[in-house]
Amino acid sequence: MPLTIVQSDVTNPTFTPTPTITPTHTPTQHPSAACAVTYSMNDWGSGFTANVTIANNGSTAINGWTLAWAFPGSQTITNLWSGSYTQSGQSVSVTNLGYNANIPPNGNVNFGFNANYSGANARPAVFSLNGSLCSVNP
Image (cartoon, rainbow, N blue to C red; front, top):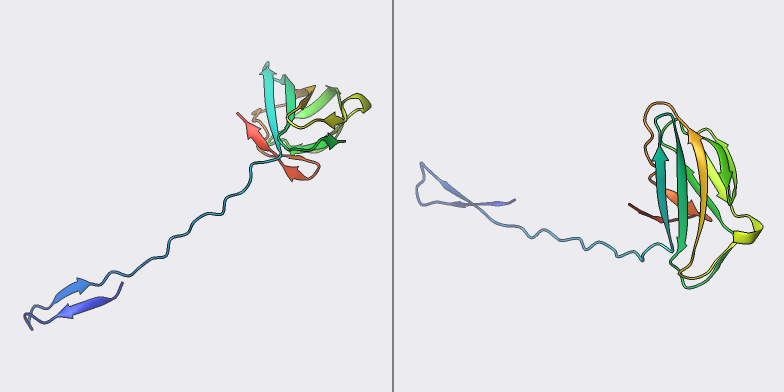
């Protein structure tokens, strides 16, 4: 901030700050995600059952889907229904089956799985559907 010196008293000058204008930043508004994921689980201490719902918030149908996420811990899927999955370390991908490939606008699909873990069982924080990020419902 620049200073202006006022010479009212040479031995004791008074410093008066001159305000500067600071530009404000207006954040860019991003459209809401075209998909939303709800991840709920029933945990029993060393394992859990998870139910996952994918909602299509877009205006066009999704024909064929793959949902991907990374577990934050040691979670390992032991079996999954209403989809086909692959897991490599913490990374998981679930792909539709023939009967649930289509998610209409404002529609949803569900799948579930059982998994084991040790330590903490934190929820995944980020999900992507066909490569696009989804919002995550609490």
